[in-house]
Length: 109
Image (cartoon, rainbow, N blue to C red):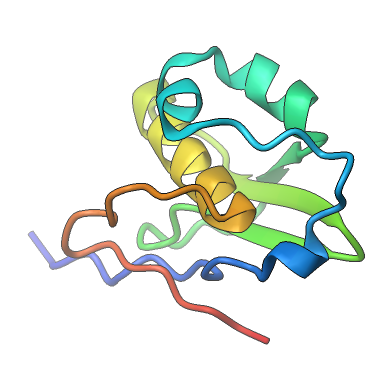
């Protein structure tokens, strides 16, 4: 079995890029609330990506105050949920543990 390459996803954005009216959840809420509620509360949108690379777990794009999560199709629900929460927390500047090896986040500016 081949080693899965690291995940490529942007790192936290500065608080100035997050609109002041956006509700930023606590770490506890981010990890326990239903994902659909979190997306609604934060105004984030989740789209399915056509990227089929097995090493791509997702990406978060923050532009002009919008947060967009891009997640690959066909992944297990639990995997998708955990990655989406991590990326959303990352974009909002919520203090969370790092993703485990071999996953990593990369900031592209």
